[in-house]
Image (cartoon, rainbow, N blue to C red):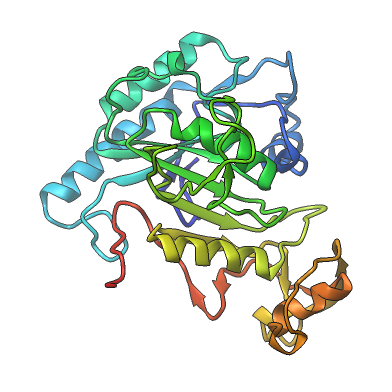
Length: 329
């Protein structure tokens, strides 16, 4: 905990440790592996979580003073001197909206968040965010708190994004990591999990509409790392980035993960492997097929085991909702 190498945060803070797996994104949970390596049994339904010590809870107060001092001095808190708060990812080894933690723990956390308004708090979850869990409920959200959900596949996008868009938040974001399938954010099932609209009606979650007044403010994308890491196809990430660019939504490409499409690297030491995936009907004239996608017609894809890379189509995408400027039309 503390200063982090995660591209989209300056610090990580874990008020407690432990969780329960709820969806395919959790299958190879790095936090559970971390805890297991330290001989800590903190995962699973009915298993008590461990609250962090008082000195850990003191850290955000120190970061808050640093952030405010930098802003007052005109230094900014970004790597290029951007005029923004320091960003805190909470909680990388737990879930803020875990239903099994003592209620007082979450109350204490939001008391701390309220006292540190020089920080931007990013709360990422795989669970339904109940209004009673938030100090502002359905009212005016705190301006320094961003709420996000993990959407590893289209099913989770259809389930979790509508819930997020109905939750009061200063900024709403999604983490498509680990990305396990192609995800279309522009054609979400409007029925979602609420049943308010007939299934078969779709909407674009990157734009405001009559169906959903709120929209997503930020999209993070990344592949999986660690034992058993599942590859992320090039066309999944490319399609997601293009959706964001078309709709003027900040996009951050965090990493390919342990596997990267051979077309995306020229590393001479890389280990080449064949990854099978379901057959894809590309359609159209074969002469027009993109060479990156062509191999999908045969259900095979050349993947490279080369470690973490964060370059997609020859460039880095490190866009944030508090510093993003849309390209001129």
